[in-house]
Length: 156
Image 1: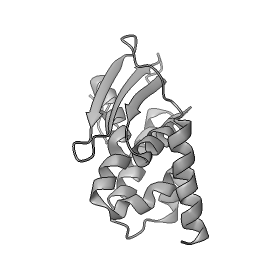
Image 2 (image 1 turned 90 degrees about the vertical axis):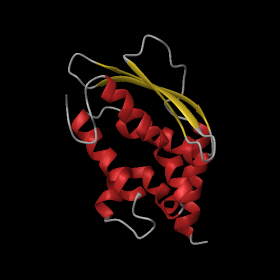
Image 3 (image 1 turned 45 degrees about the vertical axis):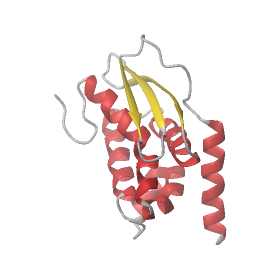
Image 4 (image 1 turned 90 degrees about the horizontal axis):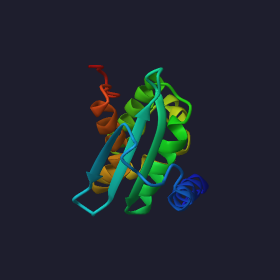
């Protein structure tokens, strides 16, 4: 295993243990989304609230699953912190691009944008793991859609 692969593996393990953004999702959240990966049983419930400016005021998630799904959720929490919805849309698109690359590689700009999320690039080689890595991102997209914003491109 190369030193870069070892580093990436350590980033995934660290984030899966730290679980940044993890907490209790309650009824005070503006919208919630519950997502399940039927292939492996990973699941997440995410709550999102928007501020008066239309950007994310708070986001919290609670879930169980493999280290990839839990690390991806923790990384997502770090990445979106302090970002506006346009920036979050760019992050979402970058994550989708990377995870659907099937391990063929993506431009360095995508990896740079995703910061620690770049550690998940190796998971894109395995179709079942793609679902694990994207589970939290799909929960975020669904919760925001319930609040009138589609981070995949359109606003209602």
